Image 1 (cartoon, rainbow, N blue to C red):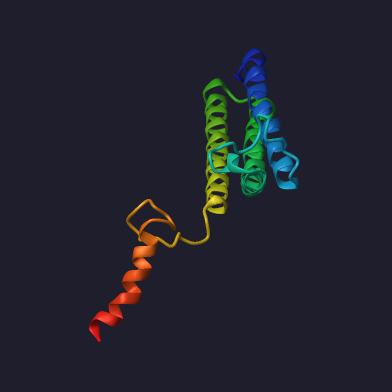
Image 2 (cartoon, rainbow, N blue to C red; image 1 turned 180 degrees about the vertical axis):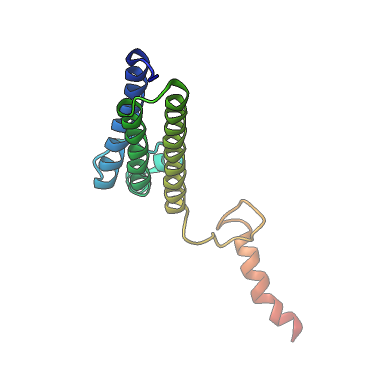
Length: 154
């Protein structure tokens, strides 16, 4: 006996809403039309560092967001169209919901890593590797030690 429409319709809608949001985020992220002030897109620490990092993070996450939208929409279509009994219909709903959400999290993580890699400086400061003084302070001592070292051996 198929599950009631009073159950399948709300569950189908619960999958259509994130499908639409994920598709919008994926398409707008790919084309660079996402707004940093909006709710959609990757908003981690690395992505929030600059406009360019936000655009890169969302461009990297876009294909995975579209894949999540497909998973959500396919689950909604199966829940609504197949008229399955209650237990299999709930399994399809839960698997679609968890699968789409997992893809969104994975896409966000990929985008955040790309933005964080973009935000990192290309090279290290000229100081020693163990201190926090950067190019000041001990950088002068480090350079002086390498210049004086050959003179001491001679």
